[in-house]
Length: 163
Image (cartoon, rainbow, N blue to C red; front, side, top):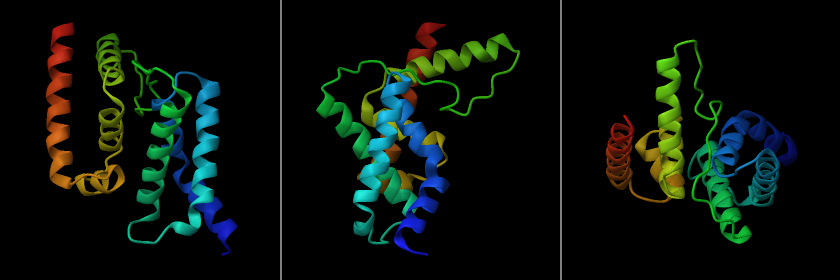
């Protein structure tokens, strides 16, 4: 396969998390679509620099998260709360109103996290290992464990305050 075919295959294989990241770090559909385009553009632009020290998907996660965070800083958007819809969390809504209410509270609390913590939670909910999260975010694996522990405690405290 040539470079273009390899890139297109990689994008198709990983498009789910690209849309997830764009959804988490934007407020509306237009911004999300713009960010998806920017992520794909930056991935293409830096595709030759992928050095195979990590998996392709790990490298793509890292680029996508960096682009999303940079995009927010450059556009000088003041993001205090970024809504996360049910699709982002792969939440399957059902008829149980109590379950729906719990998911709504959970999503609201995740929306209140800072950008880095939100990214860590997103990766954790995407079943990434501590080592993978560490490599993507650029911190140590033990630091990921510490941060996740603190985030979980913070979420638990905030959720129980709501009830």
